[in-house]
Length: 158
Image (cartoon, rainbow, N blue to C red; front, side):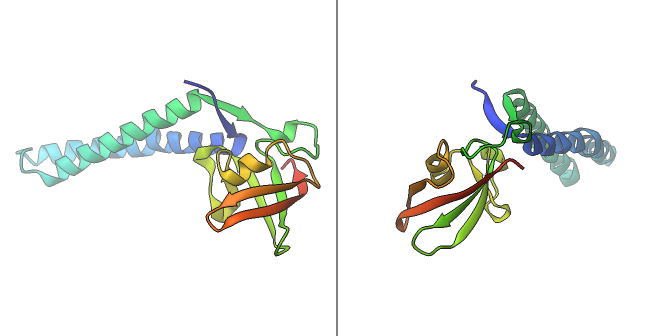
């Protein structure tokens, strides 16, 4: 499997979730299974089946996070010399050429993307259009509403 780019903050969030699942959720579920088992007949024990289902989901999520972290290429843009070029992990200010509306996005890995927080995936159309360009460049992005042009106003290594 190929390496997947991830920001330092994204990797930290996954590590925190992994720790929570292993240290808090897993023991809680094991305890719930033990308590449900003590109630007797497992065939008709809804608490037991619910706890087993929750255990299955939690163990699957633990494996998924461990795999993601194992294949992550963690990139810290703060350790790179600042520049005007758009690269993975930077925060970029863009201006819609037609409406002059300013938008601010951080280009992050697929798992970290969160539009309300201003984080767009490296594989999104807008990020793909921006990567490699510099401050002052105008990029065209194909959107469902048609082609939109953006001017790159600033690139920040936050």
